[in-house]
Image (cartoon, rainbow, N blue to C red; front, side):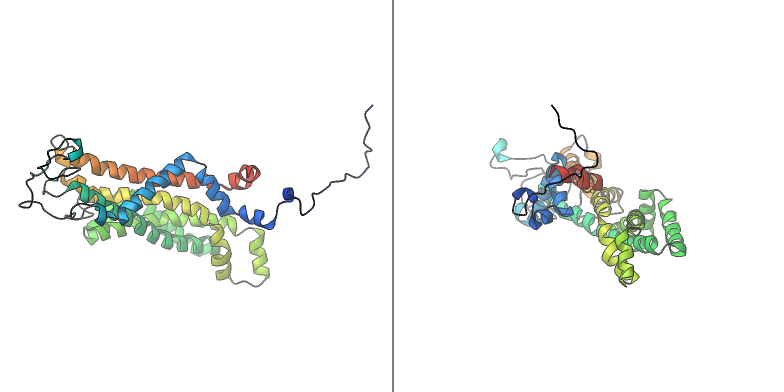
Length: 331
């Protein structure tokens, strides 16, 4: 015989004692902070782990390129070794005669070691991507934060100016800027940074507009915080997650665009070992010396892929619907 529950009887909820492991602790709460949960979710994604591995490998190569590279990237081997220009790869372990100098990826049209140039090109590409995006993020974040926080005329003026920049095709505007200020790697980086600013400004503005309406912002105002304290101390730290994702993907775009400018002669100039420039120099040797075109192209692809995989992983890991929803529940 079942026992009916009185409709007006109070419901008694029994809480576990504080010394019960199931009740959790302050340390457990801290361990479930946003960034810890983000890292946990990031390392659970196979694509993000692959991206981190590739990126770590690229950073290692960039740092130790002078140690790993058997030759100076700008050293011309004419008169120093018995090699011909655009000679194919020679690896002793794979049957290349011992009396021939070893060149893992062959030599280019100027009789320079292709492997050494490719390794040093990693340094150039990572430097280009990180510095360009850092500059664009700083400027874009400031403009977007000011526009989103103050609104009104300030917002309208800043956004309309940035809309004009966005109205032009991305790479075409970069070509126009470099054509005016002159070719070169730094000028190409500056051009790409300038045309990237509106992207980060818009992302920051959208985040600021959503965060500034939250209750803790009103609480900060009630406590007497100034506008700048609220903007830089409260709003911007909470508006960073989308910006981190866009910036990670932006590094890949910056590397690719710099390689494109170098390919058409507006970026890195010879003899700088930059992958786009290496492709441009040997672009007519696709069939006669394919190794000189294939490996720089492969390096660009792997680098862009690494940042794209990491960016996609960060986007999923920083998604508040996942972090604060199923992610916390599963943890």
